[in-house]
Length: 258
Image (spheres, rainbow, N blue to C red):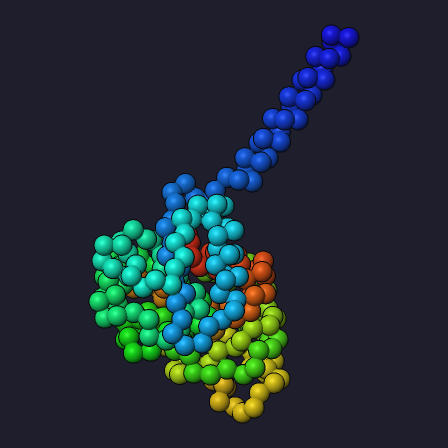
C-alpha cells in the first residue's frame, strides 16, 4: 500500500511539474528587457470607434511582449522630460491638430535620439501642417471609398511585420481603405498595396491611386517609423494576422526585431 501511495504521489508530482513548466512557458515573455510604449489616440476631428478595441488588444499582449504601456489622449506627455522614458510612440487613430509647437519639438528630439514610431490607420489624418511628422509618417490621408472587403497585395515579406502573412501573396479583409494625397513610394519602403480592382463600392474615382501603397516602413538617422493602413474596424484588432502584424511592427520600431 505504501508503495502504491508513493507511486501515486510521484505521478502527481510529475504532473504538477509538467503543468508548471507549460504554464511558465506560456507566460514567459519573448523579450528580457521591457519596452515602454506611449499610445496616443487624441482626436480633434473624426474619431474611430475601434480605437478602444485597438488599445485593449495592445494591453492583452503586453505581458507576452514585455511591454509597459501608457495609453493617453493627454498631449502633456509630449515633453522633453517625459518622452525620453519611452521607446516607441504609437499613434493609434488620432486626428486633427493635437500637439503644440513645443510638444512637436519634444517629439522631434525624441525621434532623433534613436527612437521609434508606429502609425496605425488614422495616423494619416493627424497633424497635416507638421512637416517632420508628415515625412516620418510617409503620407497624408486624402479620401476613401465606403468600408468594404478588399484585397491587399504583398510586395515584400522580409520585414518582421509581414511574418504573419509569410507564404501569402495577398490577404482579403474588411477595412476602410485610405488613399493618400501623394504616393509615398519614392520616399518609403512599401510592403503592401491595395488591389484597387477589388473595390466594388464607390461614388467616384477620387480614391484611386493606380499604384496604391498601404503598408510601409522607413529608417534613417537611427529613427524607425512604420505605417499600416489596417485599423478602422473592431475586427481588424481581433484578426490574429493583423494583431501579429502590429505587434511585430511595434517591436521592430523599438529595435527589438530586425
